[in-house]
Length: 357
Image (cartoon, rainbow, N blue to C red; front, side, top):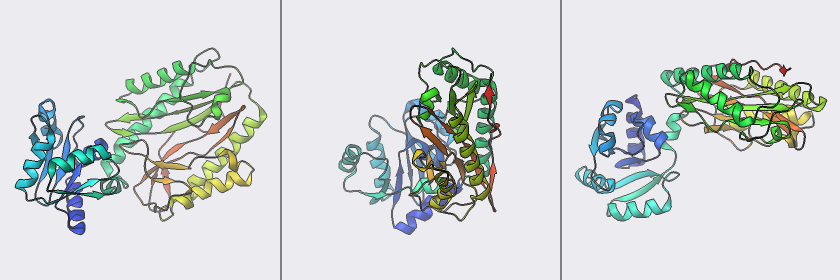
């Protein structure tokens, strides 16, 4: 954990004239403190950094969060929290309005009264936009694990095997390679199901003539990768070969032209316009990509609605697709690191049209 992250939160407190920030969301809590346990509250003031947790995690917290004072709470954490805040003279406590549900907010406000809860939006998420060298190292490793799992799974794809068995093999291989688990529910969508952008693996049996979309990622020391490849099981419909070529050309165009300084909307347009000009704009309904890190979907996104400016050090996906209901679909996805002048493709899995005989 980098103490610079605490300093940046303190800068925000000064700018917004708040006495403290409460962090409850697990990925944000981990980013700020390094703590990976399932129960804990992080509080940062101009002078203190506390990590409140229970007996189960005290020792772990002490090891993982060296820049925090670990405070063990008995019973409800809010009572210990109130004692700490009162001793520190906190009168206005910031909280992330996107992660505290209304019922929790009501209970917290009642318990902490007269301390005032002040909503904030995405303070920690904005710090997470640009990855530091250690984060990039971990993401590279997660990407490498997914690449190796893809190479492995090509050897088992054949008619008669179920999608869910393919998914299980991918996840087992990733764990054997050092992943703590999949970054999200593994997608194996074959035949007509490949027209489902998020066709999580089912019990459908692979058949000759299927297009098979494989979308999966590894989670390595908290950080995610995200890889999609679409392969053919024997000879497939000529229309599917056509949309594969268009998706690949659109994806390569995005990799060549997306760079820092663009907005997410402008980056999306590079890829989307290519697909639209070839008559398949209506068949590409999702965004071109999204950031990855501690979560598989982070901000900013590459979409028609994103006005966020892309910056050097962001790690994003580029993943156009075309989906034809009743026939099948194609998606191709790489993870990329934005550099000074463009991007570096982190994913190494091959993208040429693969036919498995």
